[in-house]
Length: 149
Image 1 (cartoon, rainbow, N blue to C red):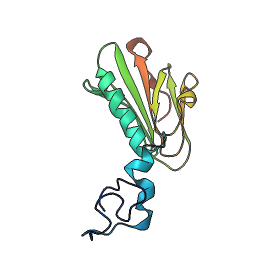
Image 2 (image 1 turned 90 degrees about the vertical axis):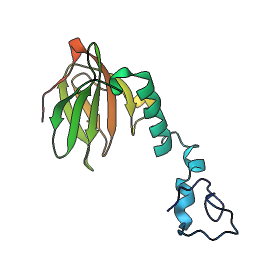
Image 3 (image 1 turned 120 degrees about the vertical axis):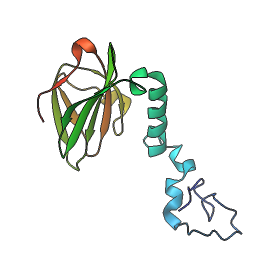
Image 4 (image 1 turned 60 degrees about the vertical axis):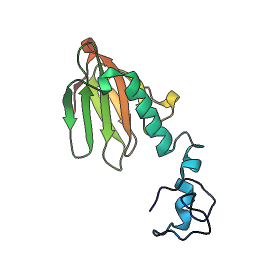
C-alpha cells in the first residue's frame, strides 16, 4: 500500500479523492498516516526521528566496532563505538518482559517504548518491555559485561 500521508481523505493523501489508485488503500490506513503519527510522541515515526537525531549527535552510533555482549533467542545486547565513549544497545526480541543483567551502569539515551523519565534503570540490570529496544551511553571504564546470557 502507498504511504498514507493524511488521516481523512479517501486515499489517505496519496492521491486526490477523484482519482482511482492502482493499489487499494484500506479504510484503517489513516490511523497510521504521517499526519496522525506526527501528533503522537510514541508513534513509530517520532521514535525513528529521535533515533536519527541521536545518530547524528553520537559518533559511536556512526562508526566504531560492535562488541556482542549477549545474544539469546529472546534478547540481544551489544556495544557500539570505539575509544572513550560507546553506546549499549539492549533489545527484547520476545513478547515477554526481559531483564538483562550487567556489571556497571549507563545513562539512558533512548527507548522504543518508555518516555524520557522512565528510561533510567537500576545499576546492573536493564528491564525491557516486550519488543523494546533501549540505548545507553557508557564510558570505557564502565563498559558493561553481561552477567546473564
